[in-house]
Length: 262
Length: 310
Image 1 (tube, rainbow over the protein chains, first blue to last red):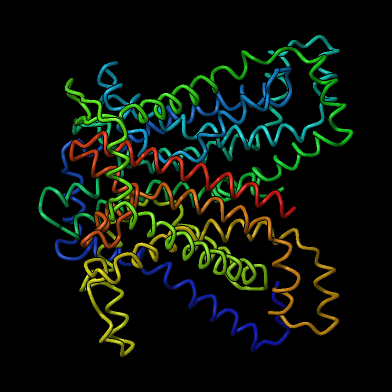
Image 2: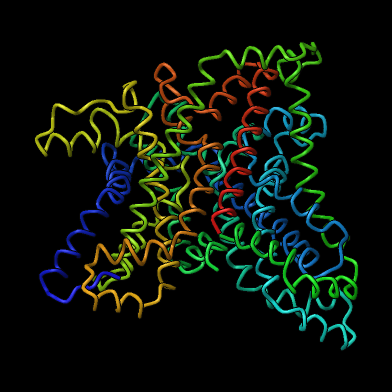
């Protein structure tokens, strides 16, 4: 984009971007450095000795898995219906779902708390999976429908003439075609489910039901404000995401940028 | 942004020859109601149920759980409209939106342009800019508390630059708490803008750029006159994303300052949660309903404006 013919300009550009990136690195550097200060590895040991330490990760993984499966299945079915099948009042139904795009999750707490209590779902993973999925599906549905709208209908017609019903067309044509979209959806939903903080805070109570985003705060409430252990907890809980991102870079970037590009 | 593409496609379908084709499609295609039912049931069920229930709760004096409920009509709304805390929360949201959007967009464009130039180790820079997007705000919150504390990295850097007089406990100072949250949000979201602009810029026509160069335009002028108009759609999309993020903001202010000190960094999300936790479910829900109305109005205004500009 910038044209740099001369060597000196190239050096200036390199220095400029390095300086500009420094503020992004400082918190990450501090996070690792402080987590090793004081008791050193002992901070990490203390974090792993938090009761139910591994449960935090298992619970987050289970919730993320539940949200991903529900969102993926509902998005695929719905996007096929909205994009390729006959529905009277199609846009009305579609925009009713899209209305949820603007919904702040804090609004869900007062009504869902008594509802989950009444249904016996309070303090179960469903109490988090259902609302998180309900907030994700509108966006993934929008992305996938836009994607399918770009696929010519001739393909469906051909499948139909070959005797494929809508179920077989879905399975043999739509699902394979939408595979690049699926990777982006899964990454996007994974990040949002794994990073969720407010809904688990509101709807999960038992210590063995807590999720990763609550682990760093553990040392804030228990031992006043123990920074080194909090940051050791932050490093341990951030690690799975960092590893996932670095090994699946392309999918993460595409997932976040999904639909923003024509 | 797909929202916008989608709408322009709708407009085409209304007017253009495309509408003919879509009629034929619906005539032949099998019925799709069952296919959309699960998504419709989940989203519309959960969301409209919650909105409806919130409206109902907002007319009550209720602690949120007990069977003792008392209808108070619109009293909660009357109180809310004269509550300076709620108004300052909305004001902070507006300031937050404008500053984050402006800084994020400019930094995103500059980073994307730089990394589209011949820079060594581009992948490393890319990863470092994008990593903050991936890590949960709730996981980073203790780190930011540390960085912004009296003995934190920000003050360390300032005093080594000879700016020792500016050091302070950034989150505990009423004049800097809001700006600290703005800065933290910028830190954690520039990566999104960067990725969007990076993708959009790879579609800029290089011949046009080359022609401008031959006409003697410098790098900055070429960026301003050719690249930025090309990525205008991305800027609009980022505006919408940022407005929604500002209205639903919760994790950072709640975990960094609890809206304080003295409510100097109060946001609607924190306000609603605090009132709810204090067993004022009715009052909290009235604030929820107001926030929803504002979010809905904002999205309608922005999509209409985005459409008008096309």
